[in-house]
Each structure stands twice: as structure tokens, then as C-alpha cells.
Length: 560
Image 1 (spheres, rainbow, N blue to C red):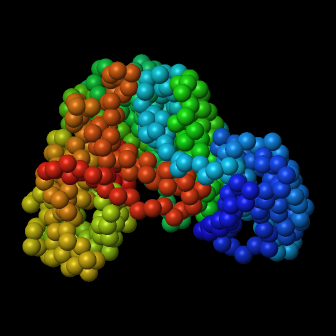
Image 2: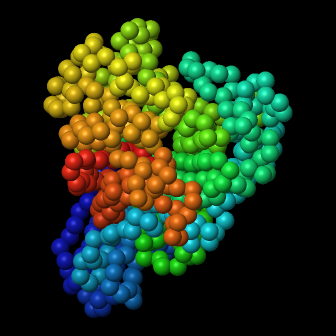
């Protein structure tokens, strides 16, 4: 947790000093030069543990200036009006009470008048979906798969594979065990995590396993996404998710989304994520699409080495207890099915393995008549964690405390009952569980009804978010407080179901109304608040965007 101290203006300078709330003997400050407006001095005292290293943060990357001793001053000269950020890091442990190993202090220097608040362009700094940018560098699915395959092969050299082989194994996991031409990994048995799972053989998605080179070339990048809003604001162990979205413009709709959770390079420190967010922020003012593409390509595949930021396309970011790879499947025109994968070693084989879809419980667990131990435990956990579905509607989420309660798929058409929690077949208004929810809502001071609460849980599933009308979530007041869940179909996205369409129009891959009107405004507010507070975690509460009558819409932490 960081505290911020702000000094008064001196000679046109506004000095912001940020210091860790952990007790340090070291003090890190900046003072203006009395003679020249563009000169100032960086000072530190009491850093008597090893050798502190001073760097300036330029375009999200550290530029080393000097190392120093216990007490040190560095004269900075020739700066024009603007904002400058400096970081003091302790890299060499020693003795005493100064900076500990790998600890940091930050200072901001603003020359001249206070700059206007940072404002970002959502189409450049949050959801990049213009063809000029995504086509100006190699963001191909083959490059992503080759990168992951090389990394996994290095970690498990007993099974060296190519990206095309990894792609084939990914889809073979959805073929039934008796399908021809096995790829050597575990196939679909019809059940996983104790729940039924739909296998998807030829002519469905499983057929891609048998002609990997052809099918991998049929996908194209349609979105590069900054999901900083998904960071863990409590533990501060990560910097959110950074996503690459691929669609299949012809031959049957199918989507692959790489949702990398990138570790915080300074775990537990809120402004450890500043280098990443500064990089995305700077895209707002970069008018050259090729330059933006180069910056994003470097970030996704190389990270920010100078700031110890891991690249999003790294197999560790898709491992168990990390990020995930998700698929939206409709390749043969049958039912929409959404699934989740992890990068694993399975019986010695490097592969992408079908796993449970997180925050997607099975509807039967909501039913009073199901008295098995898993159902009883789920309903108890739901009551205990019900608060995450309440409060500010721009940030509510569904907490599933036990992975044993998660489904292994989420249907948005066809057998949607598996995540249609509020239907009478699954939820009994006035039943025991409904009464328990009502009592908990009263304790929390909420005016929601039990059914509205359960509808909110449905909205957090893959199917509910992508096809809300199929679950009654777009009806007036479906999720309480006069709100309904936002649609994916509209003038900007006439095809619907997905939040970014795979077919370009007017130089962009169209976004859903839900993204344009609800989700992205909330994420913009979150990002700007973080940047304007210089990376502190004291983010202002997100307000629900204003809506026009009669139907209101909201946003969610996991959607889009």
C-alpha cells in the first residue's frame, strides 16, 4: 500500500513524492533549482543498504541515470515544462535500516503549470480494433502458437512441438476418444469435473485437429485489449489481463481469445503496473498506426524488459492459477459453446487442455431439491460471497469459491439451461435457497430480489454475457435497480453474440453496444483514475453510465 505526499508549489514546480508505507530510513525527494526553471535536483538520504539505482521512466520504460550511496544528489538539467517520473530502486541487499532488497520509491516532478488530467482514447488505449493497427505488425495466430510452443518445449524438452502441433492438440481435446487420428493427448470423454461436457467432433471444431496448418491460417487478429480493470486490487499481485482476440471471417464463426494475466513486476505495490499502463496511455497520442502496432507487438511478445514486465504471450500466463485461453465456438452452425483452456504438460505432452470455465457454476447447484454435498456447499458459498454481486453495478462480479462448482462449458444457444440459473427448473422463488438469499440481501441492506440476484450471476457466465436476451437478462429491471444487462446486438454490431465482430467494416472490427456504451466507459474511468493518481490503488468508485429510458444497462468485471 502506498501513501502519497504532495508538497506546495515552489518556483512553478509541483512536486509529488510517493513513499512506501513500510517504514524506511531512506527519503527520496526532488527540489527545484533556485536559478533555472528547467533544472532540479533529485535527492535521497539514509539509503544505507546496498547501492540505490536511479532511473527516469520514459514511455513506460526505465532509463538508468546513476547509482549512488547512502546520501546522494543528482542534478537534472534542461527539462521543459511537463511531467517527469523517477524511480529509486534498491537492487543490492546490505545491512542497516535503509531500502531493502528490490524495494522502490517514486517521485514525480511537474514543471510549469499543473497539466490537465490524463484522458485516454478507448480505441487506442483500451480496445484496439482498427485494421490499420492490427494489420501493421505480425499479430498472427501462428506467431502466438509458435511462441507458446517454443516456450513449452524449452520448459519440457522431452516433447518439442511446433505452434501448428499445439493448435492441433488444442482442438483434438474436443474430439471423442474414438475419433480417428489421435494427437496423443487426452480427448473428450463426455464428462469433466463431474459434469457432462459436449464433445465437438467433425464437422464441428474438433476437425481443426486434422488439418492444423490450414485452419490456423484462417484466423485473423481482430482485437488487442487492455483489461487492467481485472487486476487484483487487494493482493496487487498482478496487473490485470492483456488479451489478443482472433476470429474466423469465413468458413464458420469461431473465436480464440488469449487472456494473459501478467504478474505485477513489484508484487504488492500498486504503482508497479505503471510502466504497462503508461505504454497503453501513450498510444492515445500516437497517430501513426504502424508505430502503435510496433509498440503493441513488442509489448505482447517481449513485455517491457527494462521494467521487468513479462510478455503477455508467455505460457506461464496461461498456466493453472494464471490466465486462460477461451474459445467461442460455432464453426458448424450448431449450438454456441464457450470453453476454456490452460497451458499444461499432460502425461508428458505439451498441450492446451480443456478445463473448467471459471465463474461459471452449473445451474443444477441452485436447485433446492439437489441435496448432494456439492450442491449444498455451493449454495452456502453463494450466500457467503453474495456481496460481490451487489454494490456499484459497474463492478459487480460472481465469486465461485470452489472450482468443483464450475462447469466445463457455457452454452449461449442450444442447451442453455446449464447456466440459466433463474429459470423455474433451476431456481424456486420462495424456496429455501431463495429465502436464504433474501435474508442475506436484507443483512447487506440491498433492495434486490433473490431472482434479480440470481440473474446477475447468470450475466457473469460466458453465455449470459454474450447472449443475454436468451436468458431474459435484457428485460426491464432484470437485474434490479431498474437495470438490465446490455445487448451484444445493435447498429454497431448487427450480427451479435460477440463483443468484437470478425468482419471489418469502415476500417474497424465493430464492437458491441455493450462495450461501446457500458464496459469501455467504466474501464476508461478506472485507467484514468489510476494514472492521474500516479499509480496508487485508491481508485475512485465507478459510476454506472447514464442510460436512456426505459432500459438501463450495466457493466461487469469479467465481460467483454
